[in-house]
Image (tube, rainbow, N blue to C red; front, side):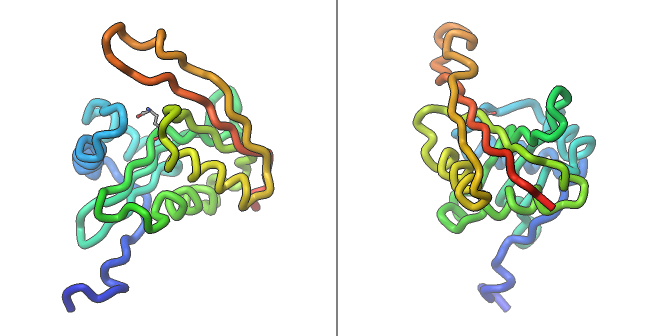
Length: 170
Ligand code: 9YT
């Protein structure tokens, strides 16, 4: 049954604590995101599992999206990281993961999605502006964490905030 197309399609599901290490490996391999501690991925996959999703293909995690409902703005889903394995890029997996999060019953009261992105990250920007188009909602881009907030010499890019909404999600 090798390479059967439906078998090859990643399956999306909520993560659990035991997925944290593989998520850390995926983020490390992707190379474009800020790599956090393994502990933080284990915790996200456990405590924040209702607002996180993984894409699994034959037991390998090939996609990950972490998010949380902002404590100060409970109708806003803040997407922290979106990672897609190089083997899966250009297939709309990011969009599928975002849709999966918004489709969950636990997230039906979400009216806004936010994410911070580097100025050069066109793929990530497209993912969120695409949601705005789909939901016929506004997209606001603003400066958020300037490069000067990051350690000197780190070369970290500024993070721009993209806020999409309001939209209905029920
Ligand atoms: C949506 C997304 O992946 N943002 C990245 C934010 C930050 N640069 C990080 O955690 O890597």
